[in-house]
Image (tube, rainbow, N blue to C red; front, side):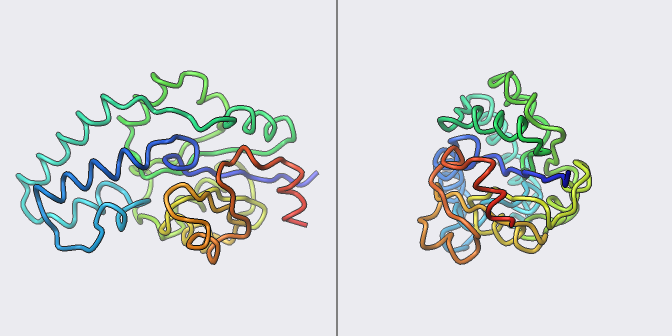
Length: 211
C-alpha cells in the first residue's frame, strides 16, 4: 500500500493563533517601524531569523526576541475545533503525519505543555531551527516528507499563509489552503482545495484528490 504524508503548518492551521500574532507584530512595527507595507501580514510563515533580518540594530533584535518570548509564554495555543479528531482519522487511515513550522523549539515546548495530547499525532516536527531557508522555500516540507518516508508528490501540505502555500506548491505536494489568515479567493490560486478548517476534510477526500 502506498504511503501518504500529511504535513501541517502550525499557526492558522492547527492552532487558532494567527490573529494574536498579527496584533503582536503590529505592535512591534509601531515601536520599531521597518517601512514594509502590512509588515505583520507579510512575514507570516517565515522564520524568526528571517524576520529579524529586517532590524539591523542588535539591541532592537534582542528586545524583539525578549518581547516575543514573553508573549508566547502567555499564549494559550487553542486548537481549532475538530483538529484532533481529523488527525486521528488520518492516522487510522495510515497517513504519516508531520508538523512543519517556522516556530522555534522554545515555543514548541510551550505548545506541548499547553496541548499535551497533540504531540502523539505526529511522527516528526520540523521547526524553524532545522531549516536554513525559510518559507516560501520548500526545504521544510521536503525534509518532513523524507522524515516520514514519503515522496513529496504523495504528500498533502496544509497551509494558511502565502509563504507557506508557495512552499507547499514548490515541494511538489498537493496543497490544502486553509482560509483563516487570508480569504478563500486569495488562497485559492495556490491551493488544490480550500477549506475554512481542516476538520472539514476526510482521509477519503484527500485520496480522491490524489487520484
